[in-house]
Image (cartoon, rainbow, N blue to C red; front, side, top):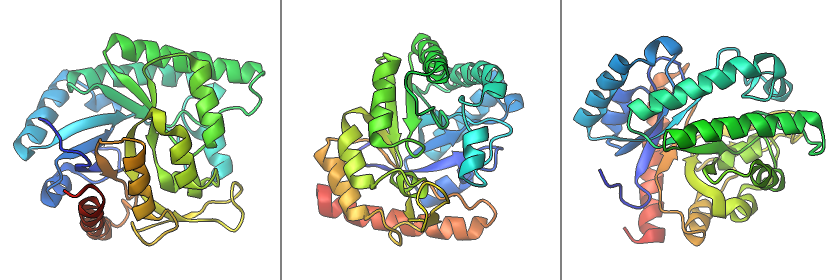
Length: 284
């Protein structure tokens, strides 16, 4: 399947509770999805075959599989620092093994991209802790390279400067960025449009999500809101995507799994908004 420039997509899940379910993606009529990885028991060859049949019947293309791990929590920024991704030392070895398994499952799905939140990278780039996170990232990239995959780090937990330095220090040519403008606001890591321009050469996938700033950026959460109702400025976001030459899918992410009907309604609104902006900016 060949996707058109800026084709719409949604973030989906099978069993992990994040993202919409596949039937919602089908109802929305989007041509592509990103998938939050199933739990370990659901990452079998049989499960892969079943999922591929389902998306084929729906006419949907899978563009990225995102890693996620038991014990992660986005309750607040300090909890993110302690629990997310491959940075926490206590869980790093087990999660490295699991991320390699996720890469293998992604290969069964015929997808050439895995993504993840690496976690809050240590700020001291001369520290042993920073070097250790670089090393585990290299191992993920090398395993993905063996599976003919790229690795996309999702933005949010680092500033644009820090993210670019981290990618440079990792020294792997299959390491790129999944840009989420709302996360820059939610984490208080910088204005999303200048950040997008700064990291644009490494952006290979994006999320379309909106948010408002916290009154204490970087210390407390901002607030995720429906697309077009926050402080991202979606017209400026898409215009900047055009400027940097991005032609890939626009993947909508709206994480309110506790209210599935509202989630679907707000994603429907997001598809209408993005379709209108795409026509205005790309002319198609």
